[in-house]
Each structure stands twice: as structure tokens, then as C-alpha cells.
Amino acid sequence: MQSNRESARRSRQRKQKHLDDLNAQIAQLSKENNQILNAVNAATQHCVKVEAENSVIRAQMMELSQRLQSLNQILNRTTSSSAASAAAAAVGSCMFGFEGDEFQFTEGFFFNNYQQPIMAAAQMFDC
Image 1 (spheres, rainbow, N blue to C red):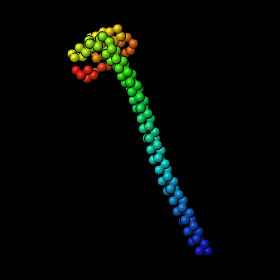
Image 2 (image 1 turned 135 degrees about the vertical axis):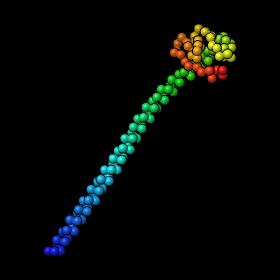
Image 3 (image 1 turned 180 degrees about the vertical axis):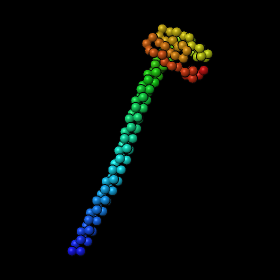
Image 4 (image 1 turned 120 degrees about the vertical axis):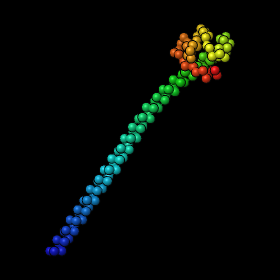
């Protein structure tokens, strides 16, 4: 009878230790799960931020591509028209005042009858 009681006590202790081990494992896995969820949330937020930045950069790239195309068109027109000599003289002094049928350069902006102003920098003309 004493041996059975001792055996039952050891069995209860083993069950309690196993239960304690399982509870500790649950706590550890819950902690790891929360860390993983936090990492996933941080990565998701970073991804959203990068996608937003990429959208802005793509829009800027499109705008700059359009500006470059417009400037190239203006440059082609100025070199192929009689205004080229007036432009060459104006470039030397950085004072633009030529007015053609399709374009005009005033105070750092190119204007034409078909498009919005396009910013031009003095460095473009080696002033």
C-alpha cells in the first residue's frame, strides 16, 4: 500500500512536470509567434512605404522624361530654324529674347503655344 502511494505520488509529479513543461513551451511559442507577427507587420509597412516611394519616383521620371522630350523638340526647332543664329547670340550673353511662331524663352522658362512652361537652367547653356 505504501509502495502504491509512492508510485501514485511519483506519477502525479511526472504529470505535473509534463504539464509545467507544456505550459512553458506554450509561453515560449507564443512569444516567438508575437515576434514573428511584429516582424511581418514591420516588413509589410516597409513594403507599403517603398511602393509609395516607387510611385512618386515613377511619376517624377515620367514628368522628367516629358520635359526632356519637350526640351529636345525645342532644341531641334531652334537649330533648324532661322532663330538659331539669334539663339546662339543670346546664349553667349545668357539673355534670351527671341520670339518665334512656336516658342519663346523668358526668365528661365521655355514657352510654346502647345505646352506648359519647361524649366531651363543656366548650366544648360554654359553661362
